Length: 439
Ligand code: SAM
Ligand code: SF4
Image 1: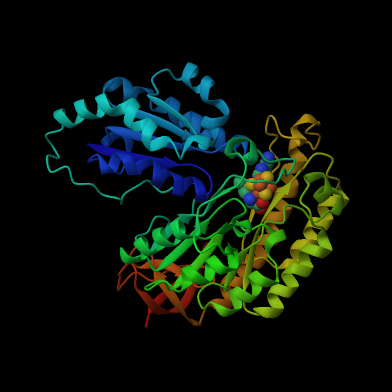
Image 2 (image 1 turned 90 degrees about the horizontal axis):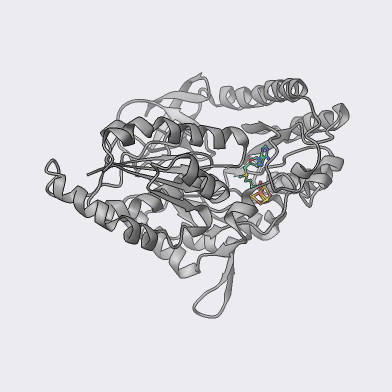
């Protein structure tokens, strides 16, 4: 029995893809590189922007002939778009076997066991090709939007919280993922330890506002995110700890102090700013302004002078004027991000901002995005070129391919040994990847 998993969207979606696969792997499924080779396909969908949702829905449509060629095959659709559009997906794509929304992921092992047991048993009986029933946790399709190298045996995602308590006016996440819930301290540490014991050298802590995590531990003492970072970094075998996505509001002095004290944690921070205009930031309900955001980043850089910062920006938010957009460009000039994820505003039904008019014309959004990307590319290329000639520590993630401590992708070819930290002399740049030679 073969399983193919596709996760659209953010790293949390990709990590959830792994969780969705687990009960099937435990039943004896093995990974398939493509849907054509698979008896079961899991699609973990994203709905944060219309484009991401459309891609997932289009793939469900394209899987119709795959499913019709053999109705015993299993198609599971999960995630944020499944949460938003569950009943519609069932009607529109009646050949989907199971639709599981993002809020139900904790119940999913039970749901899938109950709904699919008979089908899986029949499949196992007919499956002479893999009689050993072995399972594998490798070979998932990388998420189409995720960086290459994801799901490496050396990098272990660990979800520490789900949901989001914010109400950024453009964002669908709180609607489809619900309010924040934090996984217990001991559970997170046990998962990180188990993954480190299996060979992970980097632990990637995940949550929508990951640094708001806190939990009362079994000893009765409340732990906050900086405490968790320190505890994870102290695990045997863990060389690096990263986290996505922190909210600027919780990037406080306690966190900066922790990053200063943990080798392998304070080399990069992703701080999504969204806009440089105070007027737009207030409409977005981001709870910070141009000055206070840059002040936080200034404190971070004063404490960790070589830290690299990356960000997310939305252009064309309703009512965004040329002046507002100029403030965003000004913020980028001051921030000097090592890389940027820039998006055109996409109205999401049910969000506060979608109740108003999406009044920035498509052509203006397009033009602003192009100008923003040109500026961000300048900083990104500058950061890459500045590294050429240096010798840096790289974690081999997928064999001859990995990342620097500050998050830049590096390709060196041989020797290839996933999980190994090696020193690579950087010799050039190809697109967004540094090229190098192992020393
Ligand atoms: N929780 C993170 C934060 O608060 O910064 C971000 C998570 S969100 C899933 C990822 C990114 O998608 C956001 O930072 C934002 O730039 C972008 N995004 C979210 N909603 C959007 C929308 N309606 N249109 C365009 N981009 C959007
Ligand atoms: Fe969305 Fe804002 Fe929550 Fe981030 S903090 S997930 S942008 S609502």
